[in-house]
Length: 398
Image (cartoon, rainbow, N blue to C red; front, side, top):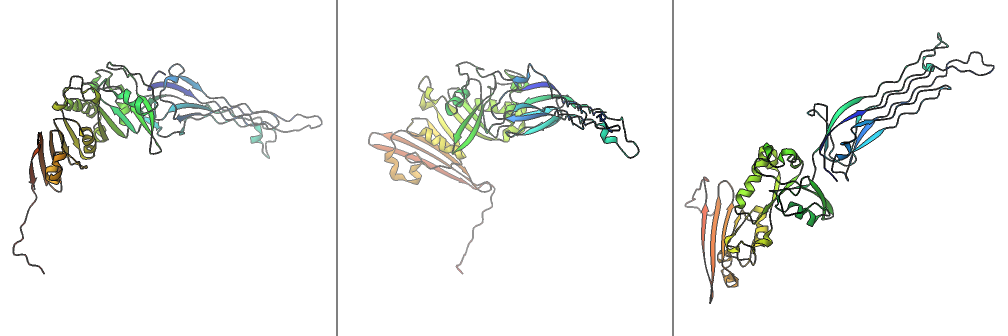
């Protein structure tokens, strides 16, 4: 299915039916009086959000949409049928703008929402409505009102629980295909993904929607590569999953490059929760030596870093504000010296944890495997920062 995230359409609600100027005409009834019925109401145009849609392509070739006209009233006080309402389906995340494409009218955020974009005209009144004690045979009736008509813009901004971002060819589509039932195009060249792809994963009996955002390159916010046409889809994602190709020469620059483009487009994007995922770790044996890699983890990410580092001969592991404890690592010389003998490979570890105020502690340890055992050493440093410290002297128990 082709992707389209912006389209201009014309909507015209149905006109109301005219009232009837009919008079009762029956045999042996000389003065039957008025019996004209009212006209039917014109059809209204509604927009309705659907979960199984992710593009506006249906409106590319059909841009004019009209609801049904109300039927005219008739004799015997019969009211005309109302015009048929028209329901236009749009994906969740669609925004409706006025003709200037700037003034927001409505924003679809949930499945099944309905919005009346053009109301049908009211039906006209038949001459029966104008009968009075002084006017027994009115010929007056009214015509139906004209239905509303507008030119509007529909813009789609994908709403997903997790938006997968990264440089081109980082493996975003492969990850989406692996954890969901989505079938995006996958190939080993840049800009394989030209449109956002959506997939649904089940976790803890809940549905989680993931969006594969086309790759970002330096200068994307200025139109380089695929430009900013898909950056707007990142705005609506609750969490960002930043996928990084671990085979890149400078992982830090790779990470900062994408962050820079996101921040240049919108500072609010940088405030979203971010999950950093290192991809293509299976390629480490193809040209990249494990001994030249240092694994870094911060806060809750220390658990991931620890899992990756276990039983691997990486150059070292750095944990900042760790939320994990490890066994058989270089830090055991401080916590549990007896387990040093269990270390089977050389390990280097740096820990840095921030506490209250400016207080933080820094810990570095190194273990080296030798023939008859393991040699280990550590450095522990506690920094109180600007915190004032008072020593209580001559303290007596009360």
